[in-house]
Amino acid sequence: MTEQMSNHSITTANWKSYYELCKPKVVMLIVFTAVVGMFLAVPGMVPWQPLIFGTIGIGLAASSAAAINHYLDQKFDAKMARTKGRPLPHGDLNGTQVLGFAFTIGAIAMLVLMFLVNELTAFLTFLSLIGYAVVYTVYLKHATPQNIVIGGAAGAAPPVLGWSAVTATIDPHALLLFLIIFIWTPPHFWALAVARREEYAKADIPMLPVTHGAEFTRLHIVFYTILLILVSVLPFLTGMSGLLYLVVAIGLGFGFLYYAVLLKKTADDVIAMKAFRYSIVYLMVLFATLLVDHYI
Image (cartoon, rainbow, N blue to C red):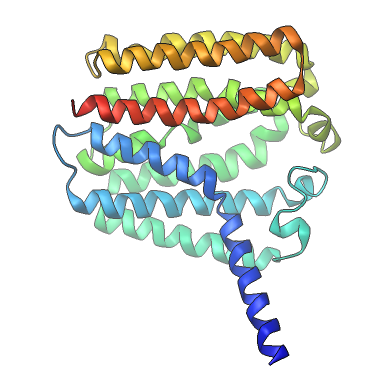
């Protein structure tokens, strides 16, 4: 009886560890923006096949990239308080298990997208996976303080993937959605990096606040937030979205700017974390508004 309970606990722990490898909160946001891209691609209802299989394929590919990131970053994760409890540095899983899991779900993702969605989406998703899991994690993250700016292209791809899943094309409106997330990424991640700059320095990761200082980074957060406000109104200016979206986008943008300016003035790491959390809410509400505005 005791042995059965022990085995059950181990199995449960393993499943929780595999689930954690997928970075579920990040993947949920990725999938959400991809699904919004699907709905914006058509005037009516999205056909069921690209909606279901596109969502599954993109979600699995993002989870695969997250797991590979865990594997490649395990030495650095062990040095940081924020990440030392992850499955690999904590010893819950080994490298072989993580890679096996990552390649299995990655292969399933590619097969689903290739044969049940379309080849363009499979190709773009594969590029995004490699861009994040390999190019960003292996090279950019450790090579330049502009790592998150350049590497943000992979994270900005989901709306384009969702759009192409439905239309098998790369539409200019989809690229507008890409641009919004691309500009959103630096102030989002730099807010976290400012608050955790000592951990990044300890792990020898050249994030902007480590190489150029927290004050320089806070200034850039303000700059990118202003740029984000300008970029976020492009869907309205191009006729993609209506007045509801414009009002919400401007309101959300100035909310983000409030935190950015407050962070610049106070140099308070608590405010940095509040700005980081607000940025997540910002993106979710912005894309939800795009979706609602599309159907009214």
